[in-house]
Amino acid sequence: MYLTTAEEQILSGENGEVMERMFRLLVSLGEIYGADKMIPVGSAQVAGVSYKSIGMPGVEFLEDYANKGAVAKIVTFLNPAGMDIEDWEELKIPPCFAQNQLRIMNAFKKMGIVVSATCTPYLAGNLPRFGEHIAWSESSAISFSNSVIGARTNREGGPSALAASLCGVTPNYGLHLDDNRKPSLLIDVNAKLDDNADFGALGYIVGKKVKNNIPYFTGIKDADTDQLKALGASMAASGAVALYHIENLTPEARYMKPEGLEKLTVTDKDLEDTFSSLSTGKEPDIVILGCPHSSLKEIMTISRKLEGKKLKKPLWVCTSRMVKEASNRMGFTQTIEAAGGRIIADTCMVVSPIEDMGYKVTAVNSGKAANYLPGFCKQNVVFAKLDTLLEKVT
Ligand code: F3S
Image (cartoon, rainbow, N blue to C red; front, side, top):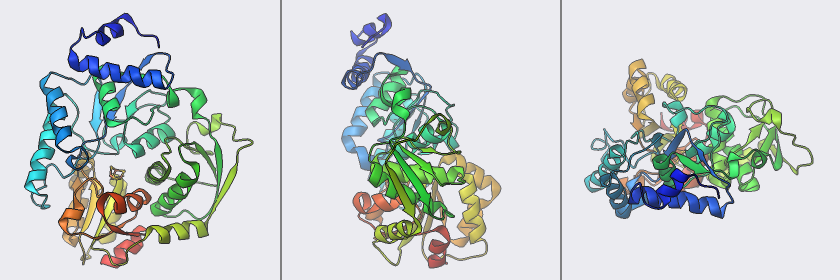
């Protein structure tokens, strides 16, 4: 792998111990995957932020790096944390968990990393351009940036995204290269997709089938930003899919020739079967929306549906701090709160400790959350469309 003189100097420790270790990690990855050189990246997004995921070793590792003067070279956002950084007391997050989570956020802040804590950085102030090389590590954000925006990122882990943030480069391999962005399976959608949850169910089916490969969809006539984020998140969770193309919708589809590919057809019956197979519970203890983090449009929709209603069960809407601010300003937050719900920023149902808060059955409209909640949070799940969920609790 070719390294510039300046890069060789980092490797020999001339820029300090932290830079040497981080750069060595990138070089090792590049050697394993056959990269020819390092390429500059426009932004990074670092996962492994929740205290629930990284525990005390993670806290100590980050504080050590921050104290040794590590500083982000490029704009870097964070994945969701284990709690709402401002309202954690009111939400009854255990104080010991909260203290450690705040230590993590402070260490990242000291490194100059934006303590954004969202899986939808592209809706919250970190929007890459078409063709831009980036190093992101949250699977749904990777899928969205590669597929819907046409930016280029591999599926980074938390450490490699942090290394890219501190060094400003990433090894040139995988999805950074044209040849590796071609589809390998044709998915013909012969089903009605009229709710965001339908896209989550579709993503779950396709992810299971495609596994790590790149699908090319036909038959999806239209889809908005929220539906594409639901589709990508679900496929990333069930099949580690980092890139997809949709005929006439996503930007790189026009350059692809999906000829001679194996074809899979998805029908209404497949979607129905997925809603029932992912639903392991019946009566929810809580409804949690916003996986991936809700857009302002999704919050507006929920707020309008809840106007003048009273909730019988808790309802959380997860989003970024930035979108919550806009929701406050528009009065959507107040309408949802008047019904008895909450807008929760900085965290989500999977990375917060909901299993320690007494919840056993969680209702969601997200294919990714429905897939993850049993394993990550010991929850039974009700997976359904938004209107069905709201009917259950109003
Ligand atoms: Fe985001 Fe949490 Fe879902 S990180 S994609 S809301 S599991």
